Structure formats: C-alpha cells, structure tokens
Length: 314
Image 1 (cartoon, rainbow, N blue to C red):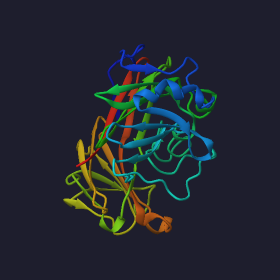
Image 2: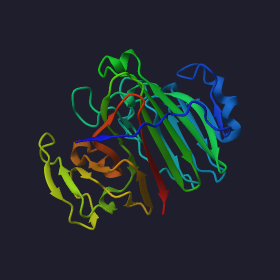
Image 3: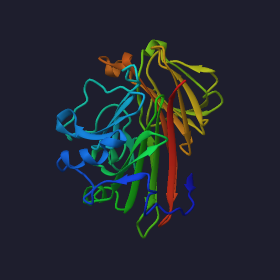
C-alpha cells in the first residue's frame, strides 16, 4: 500500500526569525565558523565525541539537547535538572564507520531490511546546518540533507530533506520534510528510531490498544499479524513489534519516574523494540518507542511529505 502526498513546495526563504548558516552550509568545516552565528539564539556548534561536530541547543530554562551532524542524530535531551531522557548505547562509536547507536537516529529512505542497507543511509552521512530560529524564545536548528553520489549508489533519486529540532523547557520537537527533487516519482519508508533511557522492568507504554500489530518475534522475516489487546504494554522479554495506524499520542512511563508524552502528526505507525538478551550489557537501560511510516510514501516530482514529533514531560 502506498500513500500519495500533495504537492507542497519547500520554502525557498525562511521567515526573518530563521537565521541562515553561512553560504557553504557547514558539513565538516571548522567548528569555529558557525559558533558566532548561533550563540545568541541558544544554538552553539562545538566538537563532540570523536571530534565530530554537534549542535548544542540550550533553552532559557536550562534544558539542553545535543544534535550530531553525522546522521542528523539527536543524542541527548537533558531537562533542567540535568537528567538525560535519551539513551546512547555503550557500544556506540563516533568515528563515522557506523551509525550512532542511540538517541534519535533517522531511518530513511528505508525502514528495516530491504533492497538497500539496513534502515537506509540518512543515519550514516553528514547533514548540513541550514539555519536556526527562535520559537517563542526557545532555540531551534534546521538541518539539511540532499542526495549525492553515495546515496545515489544505492537509491538513485534526487531529494531534499529538512529536519527542524526545537527545544523548550519540557519538550523536544522535530519536523521532517522530504521533497522529491527528481524528475521521476519515488517511494520510501522512514522512522525516528528513538532510544529512551529506562529501567526496562518498569517500562509501560499506553495508547496502543486496538492497533493492528506485526510482531517480529520469533521470525522477523515473517511477522505475525494480530491486534493489541492490552491497555498497558510492558517488556518482560524480547520485543520487536510494529503497530499500524497508531494514535497520535502515546504515553511512556520509563520506569525511572518520568512520564513522557510522545505525540506526532503524519507518522501514522509506531514500533516498540527492546533486544533483551541480544544486548545483555545494556538492554535493561533503554527502550525504543519509534514513530514510523511503515507503508510506502509515494512522492511525485516536486511533492513533499511532512511529519512532526513532540516528546514532552507529562
């Protein structure tokens, strides 16, 4: 089943509140070249793990978020008391040899296995800083990704992606826009593979009752169809399950005393994942609750698809 989108132009100019990056659109040049541009907005570019460039958002309340340009990956969302609500696995590497394992990795233009590499290429390429903005005093950054010879070697289409991240006192919001800039139509699947810091024995997810499920346990190549009958989903063992036509808001109790509302527009599907003993060193410390588009999105030339996500402390 394919989902066809309306023709919507990406903005050629952002409103005055958006501060554009310098003309070369930073993709690995000197970190200092952007520091001065964004510091007054609570947006700062610095060096992170492995000397990889990252954007640090700091809200007036003191909450912070780290966004690596490699993979366009949000790796940390720290509320004002310093508690990090996202999780990066201990086996994560920051050397561009593999995607960053944790935070909010992109899956695009393919979710899961398929004709190209697992979860596509957007999580293991450099994104650019397109600009920054202040939304009601809250800092935001806009990243950009376009096709190149690497992406075309596995997925031969021209596209333009913009990814906006906005941080407030109690929320982290994202907007993803994918535009077909090719002369031919294309289709894709996608997800935000969000890792939340958790105590897995106490994790509870509410809001999925009645959804059609595709359960990848025990055979991920032949998922079992079913319907979620539980009011509260817990994680007593290995979990890898897709929920089709999921509601626009879920509630995550991370087992550590935090209730997180996960709301979205246009993602439509959800995925729950915990590897259990497949990752014995860390499975107890995280859970993945992912907004996804499992069924293919079909875009004609010049058409765009937009989806938003908000993570908010309840």
